[in-house]
Amino acid sequence: MRTKSFRNIVKNYKAVFFDAFGVLKNYKGLIPGIQATFEYLERKGIYYYVLTNDSSRSPEELASWYQEKGLKYITTDKILSSGMLAMEFFRTKVTNGNTIAYLGTENSAHYISSAGLKTIAVRDINMDNLEHIESFAFLDDEGFNWNDDLNKTINLLRKKNMTVIVANTDYNYPVNKNDISVAIGALADLVENIIGKNFIRFGKPDAQMFLLAYERTLKDINVKRNEILMVGDTLYTDIIGGNKFGLDTALVLSGNTLPDMANIRISSSGIIPTYVCDSAVIDI
Image 1 (cartoon, one colour):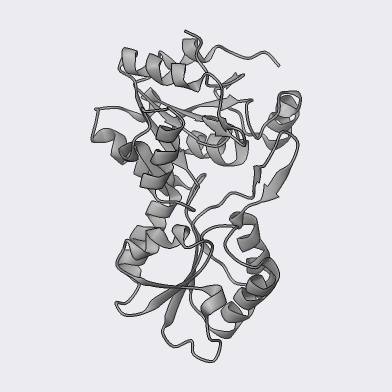
Image 2 (cartoon, rainbow, N blue to C red; image 1 turned 180 degrees about the vertical axis):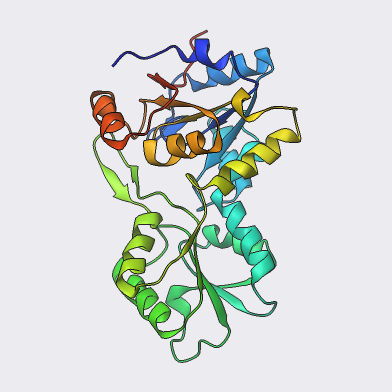
């Protein structure tokens, strides 16, 4: 597949939305050379933001990871995560004094507790006392026993009717060059199919995620949608979401979509990015 230079593409836009995993970082750490991309964007006055479905950590923790790796340009105000949407939903929908049960790590529950709400991990639920539990959230694929706590989740949601939020729609994520691991979005789909109920999802490709990012961008710069570039490594979240929101999109082949499979995946899915690039790295 013939790819285009990311430098030649990005210079034509006022702002850029970056996916995180597979675009800025991978299982080893930062994508080699990605620091130079942000130095270029800074020099050219191009605004940038990170749109992530990672609801396992707060924006502060996510930004801190980049800072520790030497990418000083990614600060807390640049992070826009699906967990932020879930937090706002719970803030307006959950009755004060009631509790939200969750599947994930304690860190992932940050988004709920930040809304001033009570939380309880699935493992700590007393199945004979569910009156105080009003909603449920799928937050992260870690922090629980997959067998015991998944079965407990299924029976909890069968036993009591409640609103269920999926704060990360990703089905998988790479753990090394060849292997992937199941993400919380896939676990939520599994439970949803078993119990026959519909859950509310936040994150790419949902339009709310892109609206959140667009409204954030408008606080910094007067920009139209066709002046923003969405950069991602996954057709079914980053690219289709950007396309539907009216953004130009760049599929990079540094993450989930491998170079030798890009043509096949684009043809079979019908999801067509505006551009295809080897990576988001700009050589200076």
